[in-house]
Amino acid sequence: MAKEKLTIPQLLAMKQQGRKITMLTAYDYGQAQLVEEAGVDMILVGDSLGMTMLGLPSTVPVTMAEMLHHTKAVVRGAPNTFVIADLPFLSYQVSREEAIRNAGLLVKEGGADAVKLEGGGAMVAVAQAVVQAGIPVQGHLGLTPQTATQLGGYRVQGKEAAQAQAIVQDAKALEEAGCFSLVLECVPMGLAAEITRALSIPVIGIGAGPDCDGQVLVYHDVLGLFRRFVPRFVKQYAQLREPIINAFQTYIQEVREGRFPDEAHSFK
Image (tube, rainbow, N blue to C red; front, side, top):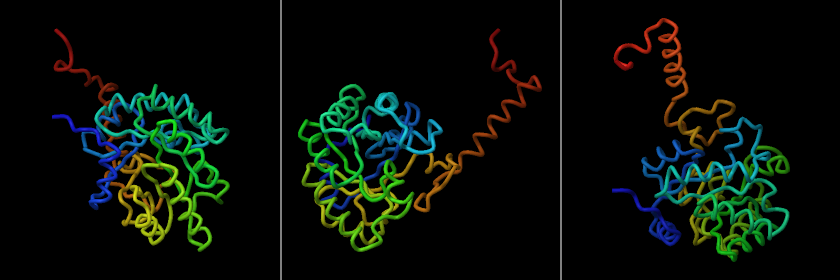
């Protein structure tokens, strides 16, 4: 029996009941199939695909066309899982109209159930406009990778009192704007716990400690497939890189030695 896709009311109920929410990224059909079969609550088609799938130096160069392409593939692979698609850099910052249009593409053509956008401040009004257009929005505060350069790099955010207070205020503003959930990335665990208690919507942590309503990690990080850098908050639940390389090397060796294909893998 196929699992049932969670709804936003059910996600809100999970917070109220104290049931932890699980989210993983996925970027293509095969990955999405595996993540859905594992039983995750939500899938994020993250713009982190720029680094994990496209070999880019950051999330900044990722385009709407690329996000749409990968979102479609993930939705086909995980039809029974709630899918959130990232709005890439400059797809929502220029104007509210453009934000609505691009969010609409990810939902209408891509098949996503919701979109995610980064930032507080001026982005709160953008999030509200997208929500009012009928598109569910997940906020994202703390370390926001699209603007990491402006934040001084990939660093923990909210250590200083003024910055922490600003994040709290932005979190409350995003909830008031209609966001159905919020991602908190790379913030001190005490601050994350405070925000989680203060909001009625689910708070999903990544590098934000254990007190959030749920957690998200990147597919490649969980499986030990990405080696360019491993953030401190990542727990690698498997080390699949070496077994995969070993399988490829065994195939190469057997072909070169004439041992593959053998009779069992040939037609008569």
